Image (cartoon, rainbow, N blue to C red; front, side, top):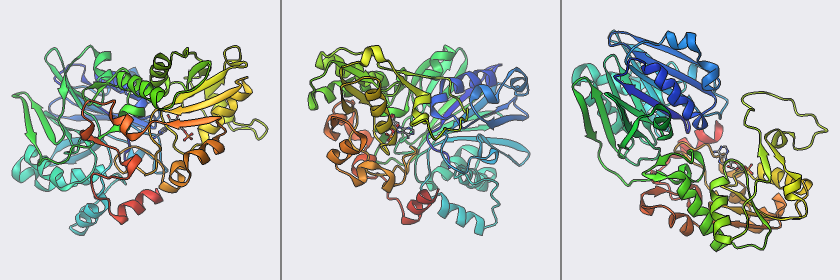
Length: 458
Ligand code: AMP
């Protein structure tokens, strides 16, 4: 099952695969487990995929094996045990003598039921990915009714989150589920059209942002031009966690600057949970934008009290028993001269299990901080996500079992304050268009007990 991944696609560029590679590079934060590109020259399709970061998977040699003017790419989020090369995207199949590839960001919640149904009719699945269900549904009718109508028909059957790209020999299609859970944007570079999960990919390529692919919209591009189709509409439920944590701050997501939203969250947090302190310190990088907002609202100076090592990659370092908190120390180091004797307001975007937060607070105290007041720019996460963010099963979410005061005690903070849900929603333009299920359990689509069980077992 793909989780919060990154997708990029380009139509009509002589260096399509190279641009897709650069786009994936800009979207590396959305997935670090594996990367892949499929390209087409109008008659044949070409593929290269592998485990690891984008620059580990691709080099000059491999990019040369991806000719053509159309390409799609995918970064997969590092999460679960099922991370084998077999499950790397894009998914490529050969059907009726034509290569068809799919990149999918999101999670389907009726994949198992559909898979059972398809297998009972003789479909043979090659992977464990729910994405493959879409391909099977698509091929069932693409010969009789045409590719665009076949994809629309397939998408009407699947439920859940998808921002996906489909490549055929001569066409590129982008589609977003009717709830619009995950982002997908449309751009232009000269005579080329592009899709990407976030606009930061366009910035790197020098492409112009045109607009979002709308929730429930399918946009098809071929040499005749660009055409839009609509799926039956539904309650729009964009993932608010994209703004809180997942997207890059320099992106426009759901039509708003992620950095600006995070700054507002920080300001509102300062109003809801003021604090007597000497410095506002972010957990880098996820807490930086909100910490700037908190500092400007509270008039407490912003300072960098933790340095992050950005070059960890996939290095595996066996933690020595004697080195307490090795995992977090590899990532973060306190700056003693900043922290010594100071009362700190520590800002982060979220607490999930509470384990990292506890270690960071201990690190700050060891680094000389006198008091650590922890402020979180989102409400307590109490419910798991079935739509593409890899939050653990409910029992592992610290806020599902403990009160704020109990969490404070467990993680060792002097005080703890979470942003309210009302406060969170006041910081985005269209509050009614968001999914907030991870905070209040109000799932926009009904999730069957069977699907919940599959998620718990993953
Ligand atoms: P913990 O204290 O162990 O719950 O970790 C909290 C940290 O995890 C925060 O710095 C968050 O930015 C980060 N975080 C939040 N959601 C996720 C996610 N889905 N995957 C990885 N890290 C996350």
